[in-house]
Length: 303
Image (cartoon, rainbow, N blue to C red; front, side, top):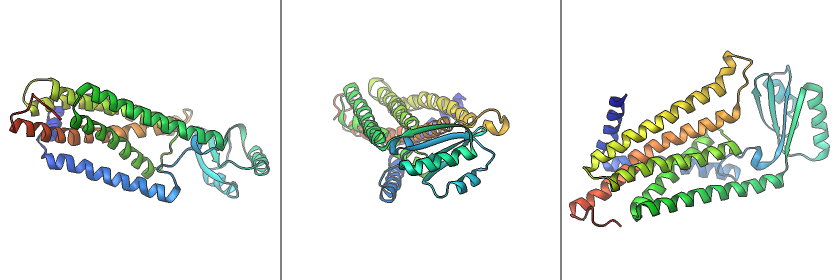
């Protein structure tokens, strides 16, 4: 396993700086295009779940298939239908009282053991504002800590850019894979900020606070970082498989859509972080530090 990490680290370390930085930048630009397209089509940069747009959720047992359920509620503002074990979760947009009464009668006629959950639009708007504040505070907090740690403008900006890219790429893939922004996936994005900060701080710490040859320091950091990230990825893949597919083998075990979404978001984000840390950030640092080495100022002063 150590040989595997050594080989992967060598690929990142020996990659040309222009290619190392250029590939992540191109992918970031494509991700921004995806997000802008989603915004132009829907008015939001990402598909919002019921937590953030409001609506009514019914959970119950039925002998109907998913297709039959969709046909049954074709006259209502149906958002989504998904199974959870032997139960179905059915989501509707928020409706007026008259429509709601008719919907409830139809639910009671075709479903048993029904559970209802309602989120008013006013509450969902408040959650949207809270989510934006949480993301902004988390991002700015990490940016401040990184600058205080290294006290160097360009390396600090590079770390922030890498974390920003991780989030943007993750949101773009959420749009592509039709993963909604819910309280669960928002928590996953906030966790991703922490994971991204860890790997990028590890790289910068090895480069600026350890002695030795630059490529060797980057390779050492890359080996440690990849070990940490792949271990986490392994656990997330297991979570995704259990939450999504175990029901097909053991029908008594329900699928858990929330865990499927959370693990999917984190897997995408960590894969993006591998690219942005060990290609983009490492490539910028090699160029930045190399320029000082050539001018014999390395070790004395950093912008």
